[in-house]
Length: 287
Image 1 (cartoon, rainbow, N blue to C red):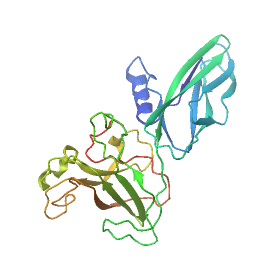
Image 2 (tube, rainbow, N blue to C red; image 1 turned 45 degrees about the vertical axis):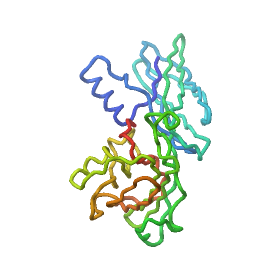
Image 3 (cartoon, helix red, strand yellow; image 1 turned 135 degrees about the vertical axis):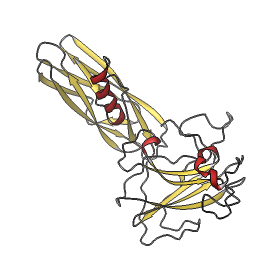
Image 4 (cartoon, rainbow, N blue to C red; image 1 turned 90 degrees about the horizontal axis):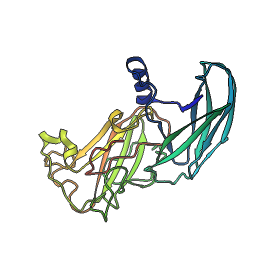
């Protein structure tokens, strides 16, 4: 008997490919994500690899800060060679959690004379609700009452540890958002004490090589990292005198500066945003 967390996205695709073309199918990592203060359904696929009908239990070991609709659920009468799915509803209990951590949750699947275990890595991500503006905000770098609360983007999400260990994460940098019609409005206040080289207009395609602000959208909410998101707003530090390829000739150098972007968006529901913005000057993270 074996119980495995149900794979999704790239992990499921890998399992399908491995099962067809290799001898190691079904061995991808068990990872998923959960928004701070939100609930998700976590399916556990129980497979009977014996020659007899089996019954037993699936038991969760919850990490701190999480609850479940039940920690043990039974399965019964599972025929030889068959599989069944046992669903658990997992709730993260702190909506204000800043995320950026992986919480490990173990499962133990038992049957007569058989026990299997697996550990799921739950990526905890911060959440927010982007408020709708009754009218289109003025794009002038100054937030009005239609914008949501300030979100902290001056902290480590992934990568090197911030100061005092030598990495400047832009302490004090914040983000506020609003939407109207098909447009998403973002105001980023960036604090950076080390200015990068400025990209000329013809080199602004390499925005990751200089200080920059990026706005990335995950329309289906299923991306594990930024490789499958849309970069809807890219504002590198640039020498562009026409202010069309970035923040203009002065750029976000030295002290704090504000910049506003309006990005095209689809879908108008006020759903929590689960993809944290990439901080200015950061390397492209592996998430």
